[in-house]
Length: 463
Ligand SMILES: *Cc1c(COP(=O)(O)O)cnc(C)c1O
Image 1 (cartoon, rainbow, N blue to C red):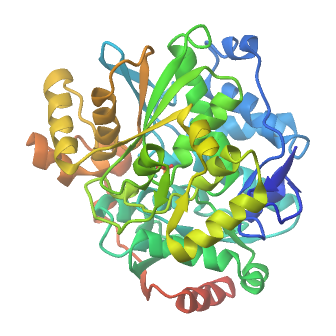
Image 2 (image 1 turned 30 degrees about the vertical axis):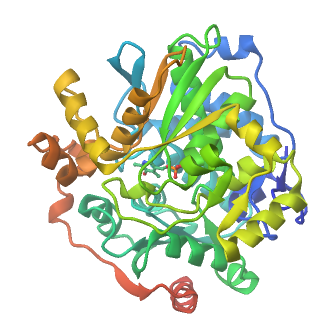
């Protein structure tokens, strides 16, 4: 399996190189040269299989000959053994046709663990094989950092720097990163927004000198391995509700669109997905894009669902590339111009292609709070603000002739303040988060400037 860039100006690479590079040299994102598929019988055969087994089947389609089947099986088993639930991603029901997929039973209580636990094992394995080391620079809107630090802490071949927007993430989110106490982990509070952090990350990755000197890599959802890992729970949850014999729909709380795009991947591979509701908070660039056909950056607003406070959804480029029938030149032009102008007019044919799968819905802060309360009153279930955005989108949508699987991306225990303000009680603290409050934190402060981050990386990599 070869991987090509969405901007069409980089040579194709194998799975291992696509994973280690993150971004392609031309600034584009890697996608498989050809989408692999499953037959209906293959998908039906996932029923009753363990999560790790389905993950192995899905991964195997993308890895090609780069990693042996045996190694892949071991990695998937190990990765999902870190989850505190035998189903890994269990479903609970909140309405006649509404089901919540709990993606938060991993080490950092957020859905980012699902992909990161696997990615850490994948990359450590291939680094060891090629006698290389890497420095991961991670830009986090809250949860990626914690998941990445949990996954990579103490690993022999990796150093990791997690950048987060100072003061814009929850205390529990911050503590998952800053209390790791490992020498291969550094955390940086950046004086800016998540979009600033992401822009610094992208600039760093396009700096060839820096890339070579520190073995720079990324684990953000621009990394294709994460997308693949996330497509697995689309299969397991859909099959649990009757796919492929009947179609299902999904409601996805969205920011950088990695999760939403993973649904597109599952559909392209053959899973009968009727619709994917892309639920956003007030940072609604995606909801507006699907609604109006114009992808226009707004100003980032701080909300109760900070992991989605994003106005430039990296993975949208992958969908755009598919929408313009994989025209890399056209995609490169649109997304290079976007950096300057902050706007892209989606060609009508591409928009029509997107709308075959996606429907965007913006959810206000008030609706989010009311949904947390209503869900608690009606079902006794406590949901976090990110999940609540998707639950609101589910309730607002009529006429979906399929069960809707709502992706629950964080444990309510990660957002105790936001939740208790609404329901009047604090969510129970899972054993994994107990003790975080007592541990010493360690992090540095930097301005939102590429020069400062570059210098920091060079110093850290040299230690
Ligand atoms: C990252 C994150 C999201 C958004 O996912 P994307 O793949 O960036 O769209 C939603 N909820 C939570 C809790 C997250 O951590």
